[in-house]
Length: 601
Image (cartoon, rainbow, N blue to C red):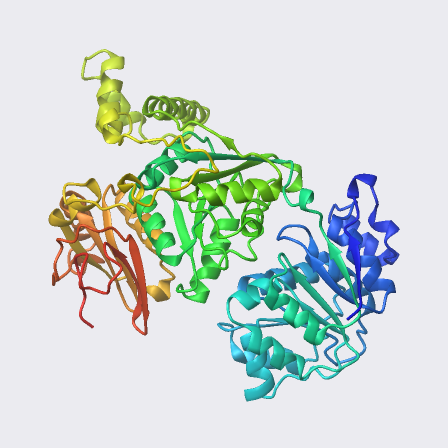
């Protein structure tokens, strides 16, 4: 195997796209999108793909512009008069495949046909698109194999370019056999492009077996972190991570970010607890229905929700330029994944924050990450309870100032006059309203004490340290005490209405003009939904919907069947898919045996 290593071009020399050999027509499209200078991987790959005959391996992280690195040269070589598939691009996830296709379309002429292939998409649309003669196909390995071997509706024996995007992730999630099988359907004279953030043995095996003479384009280690990103961490006891997270979010004026967790169980746990605190949050991982994931990502990109909790693989393909934060709620398994995560901030020249919560058992990983990025991550002190409360008060004042700019749009003037007619001094009346509305927000008793750690990043973790083990909650804890005084409500709104747990809460709050303070199990079924609320909230909601429709209310109390509620362990929302719907459970992740309500189907 011949290999020529080419370090990615240093873009500080201000190489322009016009220096890379692209056509005037393509340069006009690039300029129209506002780009002038290529990224390092683009400056390295584009000339090789335009002018060379070798295969190319690119080592680049998410967010470095690698899609354009292969898309621009490929589009220059597309024959729009041919109905043959000329380029096949494989991506590990549906979301990433969609993003790659959209990016290519943004540079392509209208005559270029691009077809997406992935599980969850309407098969009739795919078959129709393939019959139309696309020049470029972008798909996930499983769906491509389905069209090649079972349906026999895909012909790739004339492709010129075979592109593996995020190859390490495809192998991580078990697509090695599919990739090798797909290669057998391709011609020998094709050009192979493989892009991967890391080069593990599994990638090298693919390279040695299928890629011969090639150029290797790499990004130097010191380019892996963006100087626009402020990296910092909070060293906390494992059981205090969630409370620490809430404090950090609370002292930000406009928090808009992704929270990364290592496992699906962690995602369910964190999202459930954030939702119970009243945050606009949704979450994605592989157990969530594809269409629901797409709707969630769309809402996140449109800022309809401000916090997205995700696993690493499920978050592949998310590209949001105006994020303010990326949070490592749990540290990843390797430094490369860390750079992937934080690379989602600091784009488009903006300077934002990457925050990590580090417990004692994470100290070695923190040290490994710091060694890999050749930089110490700044250790910050957590906000005090008094800081959080003062910040909330300031935010209330600022929000009120903004509302007062549009006095004509205020709908409570008459009520305000009635209150002022009580005869008390205005400041007393306002103080009474604030006490009624914000007593939880401004009360120090509403916050838990946190223990910050002082270990060094190269210290050894004492496995006997009981204070740093996974949390165990007794029944007096506020997260579980409500289970004994909740009610289960039946809602005649269902999955076909595209309700998510958060949108169901929003719907109820909007209809009743009241905030729900304590929310438990939420089950979004195919034909109806369930939600657990505290007795006070439930009684209020039932009364309101009874007023709306006395004969057939949209929400009524459900017939309950309990299967025990004495569990002291915490697992958050656990999701179970079935033909009937998707269940988001508060309590144990086991199906019905622990954690309260179970509905027998």
